[in-house]
Length: 189
Length: 189
DNA sequence: CCCTGCATGTAATCCGTTACATGATTGG
DNA sequence: CCAATCATGTAACGGATTACATGCAGGG
Image 1 (spheres, each protein chain N blue to C red):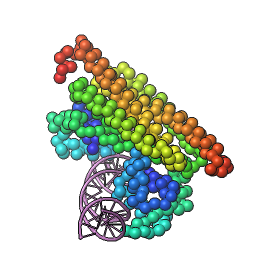
Image 2 (cartoon, helix red, strand yellow; image 1 turned 180 degrees about the vertical axis):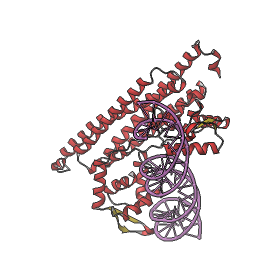
Image 3 (tube, rainbow over the protein chains, first blue to last red; image 1 turned 120 degrees about the horizontal axis):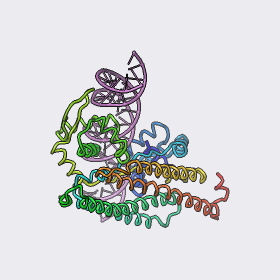
Image 4 (cartoon, each protein chain N blue to C red; image 1 turned 60 degrees about the vertical axis):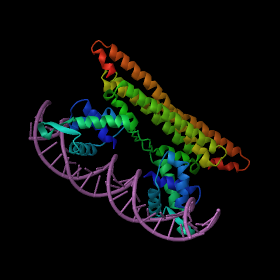
């Protein structure tokens, strides 16, 4: 149910069409709340039906410019101040880690190295984004940078964790092949 | 589509019923891939239809014990080695941050403080989980700890970021109320 | 005149959540 | 015998993804 509020939030900065919002999304909110074009137009329709936004003006090519209503502003405030953020996460990346016993140590390490790389690339990408928006100082951009910092830290964490995990997996490999309870030829399988 | 693989992975450790798997989930995979009872039973049925698992034996109270087949093991391997982890995340927690301009500085800080607390609590919880599983040294637990470490780092990051963000918001508040372009009474609204 | 970009929509499908529904067994 | 636990399923609903479908307007 958060796409509603993402749209309300964007429209609170000023009126815009679905198309405008779609582009705005890409450079900002998509990082924390991705949405497709279909979804966006659908939600705009529902928001208008609910009276949280209105069509302010219609332009060329069927363009509809939406503006947030008082009811919409109230709903946004309510969501921001009183609704607890959901804290559900799904990481199939970590799911695989649980099953490392099913693949070879080398494959596990290759997997983790790939994760390390993914983290590093994301850091690079976000750093670029940061440079692109460095000159703006409107509220949306200022607070966007606070969110961006989260992303930077997250990806650095990802990268560093992967490096740590590689060492951990290597250590476990050594200890289990040295383990007198298990045959030493297991490490080569 | 990862619930399939979560179940295949668990069943690779040994045969189990839906009920067993449900409980196993709670203490391990639910942290990285939550699933409900409905979903789990549904997926088990579909996995059996697809021939990736089989009903090994039926017990009392309609209990069905499932075991993974060779096809299932192959599918798990394929998923682990060749399917790229999806990297889609949705954080309504961060979405709100983008719209901090719509609420007062004090409310924004209260929000961040709450996030800081949430992170700290999660760290405590995961630390407890770590202590509970400290004595096991099977593969699943060993690698589970590697995933747990990710969770610990993640929540520490969350906590530290929130603390940093509070300072950032305070700094922005001071600079905008000192800003000659904007009226100084804005900070009190 | 045609291509690119602007602009909006619908339909099918999948996954996840919530709630409902049922019944067998075991231990106190 | 009754409550808790074991154990499995179905149905309704909502949100997200993908693909499809359409058409106008402006610049070269």
